[in-house]
Length: 481
Image (cartoon, rainbow, N blue to C red; front, side, top):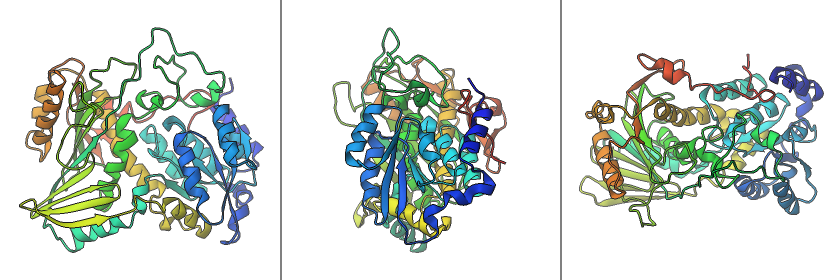
């Protein structure tokens, strides 16, 4: 197989692009009134939702469809019969008649697909989480700046006008007084993904090499090919990267107003409990973020409230949202709505939003105007929020089952942590899980340098070993200089 460097060189040569040739990719940007010709570099579930959203934006035409699964391309083709199709996304990336692409692939493809597209002069809408590993997110930012591309990340709640109201309520009006701490929740019931004795056979409709892309070629022991890649570290980012990025992005936006890009310290732990399946990412996860200002904790679980239950555990606040505890009350926020309570628990104000339905139109506005500052979720913002999730996952992977109680105790005085741990222990007990179970693991406090985004201190070696992944030959993300 050709080396990744050679493959990239040939790809750029074939597209006749590079820094000097970017004008070739600007066909639709000469006039703000021109039609924007959009290609989708995958045709899965989220991509199909986005096809509907982008189709509603005036002046946008979906002209390209790609997916390594031929059945998905064929299905999408029935919606857009005039669109070009390809199993290899590079065919659409190199097409000079395409202005922008939507990357809603598996997580492990996000950055490489986005970078290739920007190198070919395309603007990019890339789904969350931006990156599968922190280093490649940095390269995606560098590519957007070097090639002067518009790059928006799909944390769509950024485009909900309600967020501006919430920031004014908390900060300008100080309606609830001083912010004290934040608890973030992601409690959504899922099920096990199976654990086969023999590897899952390759789907004859899927080009396996293209589907795998940058990821390592390893046998898959789950029952389903699609979607459940989320719970395999080789291709996914677990529930923290799947849903955690949305709620943590809300907190970074509403509570911190994006002032904290990288936390100072993180401690976290959890496990993949009960299911005994082929998944690797935790289905129970608790993390503390020392930000240097407002302390943040997040609790996450995909288990029901009881072994025979069907609903999520009953924790304070929204099941997928956050609670901002303040001197004079609390604010509970989630997608599309929020409620404010006084110190006695009386509801004093409700906020209604739209969940960010204009996010795709916001991207197209950036494409037309060439002004990245108009984007609600520019690639830098998306990288920062994704980073909190990447760092949380790193802490989990760097942790172990030794001295869990002592590690948790080291954060006893961290605001909100002890309360969260008590809640999580109660949740585990409902499933007859001992908090000292060997399947559970926890990290020590792991320090980060906010300037470099790298771990420092006693556990730097373990943490930094997971900042950048190993790439399969021919599909490497290379450093952008």
